[in-house]
Image (cartoon, rainbow, N blue to C red; front, side, top):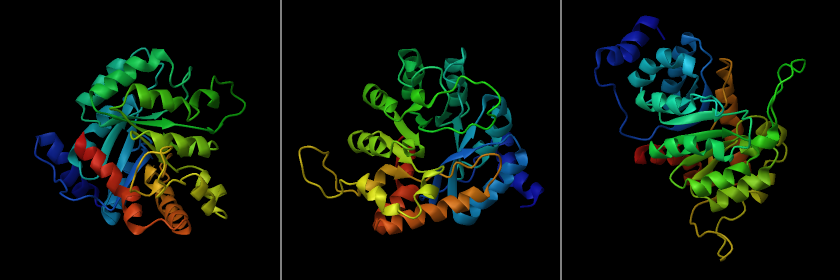
Length: 294
């Protein structure tokens, strides 16, 4: 995309206070998990990709990048949704939630590497503030990369198990929660929690759809309750797989992962026999409806 055209179409409306072009229909795909890498050039590439596929992305933005990214998101509300990457242990966490909300951001994420369990009471004021604003919270759950093994860090996946979201979903029922990475490898727990909590969804980004590529039907045992009538499971006419939402976990500017993730999701859902209508909800419909209610 020509940089001058991109500036006029995206940044200029926000700078001048003009109304940005908005879509009246759901996009074809909504990616709930795209990390901003601090490079403004990445934003133009991302917007071009989203235009090409009629897509929308939840852009995860650090507080230090808020000033740079805010006008871009404001100028492209049909393509970008802002999520603030707040550190739960930051003394200014509540202030940052307020700042992101004031900037028009719709949620927080990816919440990562807490010093205590995600459900620790010291974090409840943050969740309360987010619930007040009707925010979506994207949590990292499960295994986490170790990019510099020589450097000691205070990181433990025990604090980020998907089971920690059980208490949050119950205590803050008006929060929409997304558990990134299917709780890898705690898939069974992730599925069971999503089954019972109407405010909890799962994304399958990361390594899971790579390691399961020769056995995608395994996930039918995780999302098993489609069409089941029993007092032991919530009544639902939807496919159990509709607790999934699409996510790529693009980071470091590697936008190619968006296409790879789309392909993996399609192959997995087709292998599991997920109906087309349910797939439409997984790729966009569910998140679109949540955004309209906020």
